[in-house]
Amino acid sequence: MFLELRKKFFEFWKERGHAVVKSSSLVPDDPSVLLTTAGMQQFKRYYTGELNAQSDFGSSRTTSIQKCFRTSDIEEVGDDTHLTFFEMLGNFSFGPVKSDDPKDTNGNGGYFKKAAIVWAYEFLTNILEIAPERIYVTIFKGDKDNNIPKDSESYAIWHKEIGLSEDKIKEGGREDNFWGPTGAEGPCGPTTEIYVDNVEVWNIVFNEFYKNKNGEFTKVENPGIDTGMGFERLLVMLEGAKNVFETGAFHPIISRIRELAPELSERDTRLLADHVRSCTFLIADGVIPSNKEAGYILRRLLRRIIATSIKNDIHADIFTEVYEEVKKLFGNIYPEVKNSVEILKVWNDEKSKFEGAIAKGIKEIEKYETISGSQAFYVYETFGLPFELTKELASATAVRDLSYQDYEVEFKKHQEISRAGAEKKFGGHGLVLDTGELKAGNEQELSKVLRMHTATHLLQWAMRKVLGNEVHQMGSDINPERLRFDFNFDRKLTPEEISEIERLVNEEVVKDLPVYFKEMPKNEAEKVGALSFFKEKYPEIVRVYFIGSDESGGIISKEFCGGPHVQSTLQIGKVKIIKEESVGKGVRRIRATVE
Image (cartoon, rainbow, N blue to C red; front, top):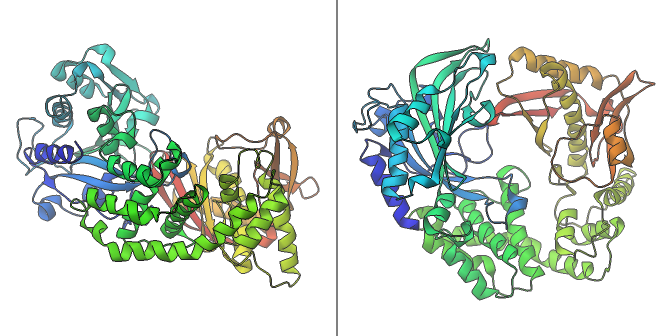
């Protein structure tokens, strides 16, 4: 079904006037995202009218199977569903709508809700032969606050045209069944989602509204269609597999790993399969290992492959062997993965940099029945193994009482020694600081990273003042060049809002407010109003970072945080917001730096 599904998908849409467009690179030309995450990304300028699909593709309708990469799920890889690299099937219409009759297969004009819904249902039930009783759908229930009505048109199509019973058509709000806009203003609209066996397989977006700068929604003249359907998720259903790793997208890869390492746990087998596959595609699209941006993602994955191989005493060159299976499986679909010389060169270079140090580090780890923070830091300082990798490689018993706070105490001791003039660095391997969120390669970079880390706390405080207390952090990434701060919000910030946030931050910076932490029970931290925004389980004793004091005019920021930070806001310097952009439905991103 691996090749058959692709063929059926493209043939179906070609018969309906769609031009088949090849996948764009995983490295997008869109600066708002680190890697390509959706099929519509390469078509953004066709929706805005900057480019003309009829001129470029010979049709106002396109279809593609897009290479995609998701960085947020790296730690979840190994379960039944999470992947880093995946493929997205999609069909797109850029308007103007010439006909919404599903029988009209002319590609000289766009289509809208009726054609999109009928065709999607036809593909699932007629072409893929999915039984109708396995399907239910969702539609947009409306938004009274913004005067957007219920999507009764989609409801009528599903109920009257398709024949779904009322109990098979569920309603969802803005969070689930409305997309966009990607900026302060622009096209947006309701969505209908198709579920098979209670799993969402297809999301169809109807770009029928335009949101203006005043926040008002009006109907657009030329509505568009944007759909997405997960390839691997669909294979699970079609092949009757238990999970994505049992499908044709992985079977030869998994089989080869089991031949090379028959005693490997199921989770590690899946991790290697995912990471070799995803690294192959990243390298094939020109990414090379580094300590920032996409290069950092690649380095992290390659080093997890190495660490997993060493931990499990796998003597085979797992990447080289498994890469051959990836090449056989995908080479005729994506010719770039056939570039064996370049792909294996990148692998071997990174392997030689990391393998020797990590092997020695693991031997050191194995000496400890339990690992303290100071011992974890010694492993990092001597062998270059970051804290997270030490936790991953050591036994569950050994790391039972290991905390990042204890590790950070040793880190701060070393930092003070460095500041006093010592030339020693952290073992000569890896990064001086790598918490996952913060990355620095030397003491000079470390200083700037700490300044920007504290700046994120001030940004959080200022955004809540300007945009409301419902705003909260969704993630951040900080390196010496810039900070990235993701937050929940459903529209683009106005220039005035950005200026006000920047002004408030810098106003507090020059007050030279103290920055300090207190360790306390988690329930006490919650009682004092410390902000925490993530789902992970915090330990019973947590660290809360404060900015400000009663002596300085009051505390302005209290947040759960592992640190490290500067000691006063004046050390931050001037904060400059570089860019504000969308990174997904309901999630915005600020890029900023310090001067």
